[in-house]
Image (cartoon, rainbow, N blue to C red; front, side, top):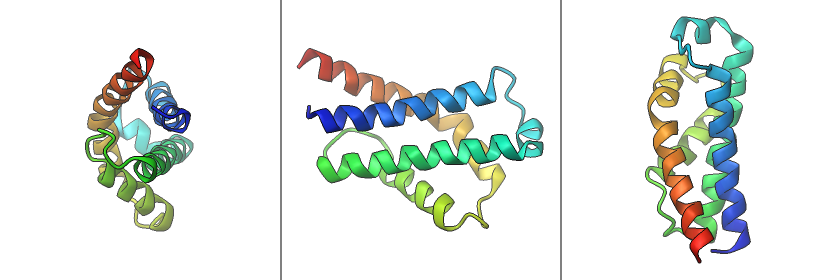
Length: 115
């Protein structure tokens, strides 16, 4: 695995960890909704994840990240459709998908360590 690939995998892993840290153990949609700073921080981390996924696919489109295209599309939507971003949809995404993506990235990094 090229060094660039490892870098972009870390560029996905770190924002996921940040999202978990931002939300804490008390995941409450109303608290999320009422905190503009939290919403913007989460959106920024999602943008970083999407950009890193885009860069990974440009290097090697066979890298096994499930829903990579949707991740990139979300990044584009947040960046370019900032006024249309729906907090309910973002909440649904961050409630369900980051743990799965984190596991996939960890598996890819483990494979890199073995090679």
